[in-house]
Length: 130
Image (cartoon, rainbow, N blue to C red; front, side, top):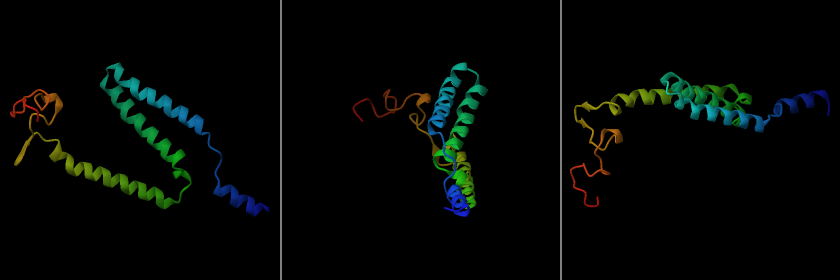
């Protein structure tokens, strides 16, 4: 094997990844995201929930899906898909998150915290096995 073939083979197969180490980091991040809400501070809860989730998603995409060695088009496709996901959420959330509106009403059982619903028999249908 000459130097050119060796370089081509080395480019095709990136450096060995220590998957056990990556898994360990992901487990530690999971523990942080689970422990965050126990602090009782809203900012810490949000950072540990969403911040750690973003870091974990990046690590999985980079290391297990090998996006760091893919062609540039994959990065653009990922950006487009994420932008479309945000656009979809932005488009439907104003309707779904509202409590009132024209031709829109939420029943008592729509949100479990509101009370009522089928479990407590407050749905107006009686409690006879629906």
